[in-house]
Image 1 (cartoon, rainbow, N blue to C red):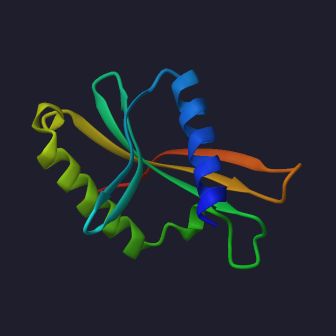
Image 2 (cartoon, rainbow, N blue to C red):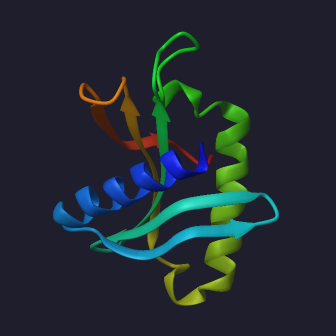
Length: 118
């Protein structure tokens, strides 16, 4: 599944860069987990979780970012910001880019501000 994840992370990065975001980090690993993408959109740091689900038998890809997963992403983002203090004063946002469906009919969704750190 890691190979599929890599494909969709690269696809999401390319789509976000076309939308004007700049990539600051990809697959940033902390003890709390991994940040798929860290992007910058103007004066906002955007932490992006990329999800793929081939079928929706357990819900769609976006809903797989559970409150527990959100908590891990928030902690990982705090560690990234601590390691990159030049960005720590900027606004932050958590986005989810989800891909659903089998090859040939994949739908993509970009949820800007999918959840808050509060």
